[in-house]
Structures are given as C-alpha cells and as structure tokens.
Amino acid sequence: QVQLVESGGGLVQPGDSLKLSCGVSGSTFSNYAMAWFRQAPGKVREFVAGINPGGTNTYYAGSVEGRVSISRDSAANTVYLRLNSLKPEDTAVYYCARNRGVLPTNRLTDYDYWGQGIQVTVSS
Image (cartoon, rainbow, N blue to C red; front, side, top):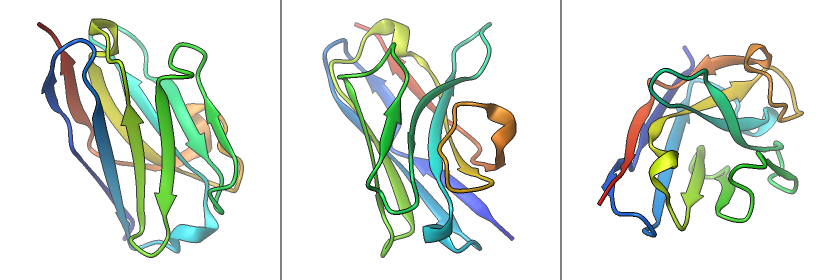
C-alpha cells in the first residue's frame, strides 16, 4: 500500500521560509516523478513544483518560480518543498503526489497517489 505523508506546515509571517517534507512508503520511490500541488480556499488544486525520478530535472509554476525549490532524497524516500519569501497568497493546503510515470507533469490526473495535505498559512 502506497502512502504519502506530508509534514512541516504551519503558521508563518510574510517573508518567512518553510520546508515541507513528504515521506513515501510502499512504493519504489526512485521509479516515479513526484510533485507538490496546493489548494487555496475556494480555488482549484494547482501544480506548484515537480521533480523527475533522478532529481536532476525540476519544474515550477510561474507563480512561485524563484521562491520555491523542490528536491528529493532517495535514501530517505522523501521529497521536499522549500518555500521562501512567503506571501499571504501562498496560504493553502499543500499536497505531495506520485506521478504515474517519470515525467513530473502539471496535470492532476497524471498522479495516482496523494498525501492527505498539510496547511500552510501566511499571515501577520
């Protein structure tokens, strides 16, 4: 059984940084692309960042590029999302997801396993 568990969220102030983690179990971690999505209240879930199985290629949504960094550690079966210079509009539930293949696309339907989500709130 594949499980994804996010951690590291919370309440932060504008301009702060945060690092989210997603532990993966029950899957051959290094075989699949991984990604982070987010969903703000009243909005659709959107792609934030993706990474290929080897960790050599990363992709970012235009709205966060330059402020976000995705990485993965195969030894720890964990994917990370570093969020810098956080803004109130970054407030959302953040989800990690496993792609069905090796390309970290931005389409929700390309992902077959999801974490339960973790809240990130940016507020002064």
